[in-house]
Image (cartoon, rainbow, N blue to C red):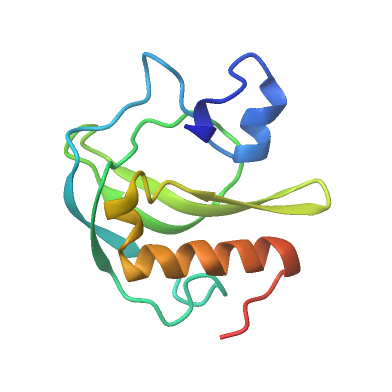
Length: 130
């Protein structure tokens, strides 16, 4: 998993905004859950509504930097609302953290596909052509 990469490289966690820490972060059993779009104005999520997805719901990601949450979900595992899609500025660049799409089945969700395409476009250009 990308957010668990480079565990000894402190700057990687700052680049991602949140990172998976072995022994602390985790997820419950894969299941269908509701993803809540909390920023419907951001170019990545503009016009999107809450959606259901069948995936792993990452929880207890670690980090303290400021992030802008776009989509979140309530985790039965952590008993908290967890950020699943968020952006942050990193130096002169833009970062999108996306915790959706762990396998082919999860990637077949049209909303997940939309988030991936829009996230890449926004990170590259700062805008999304609808």
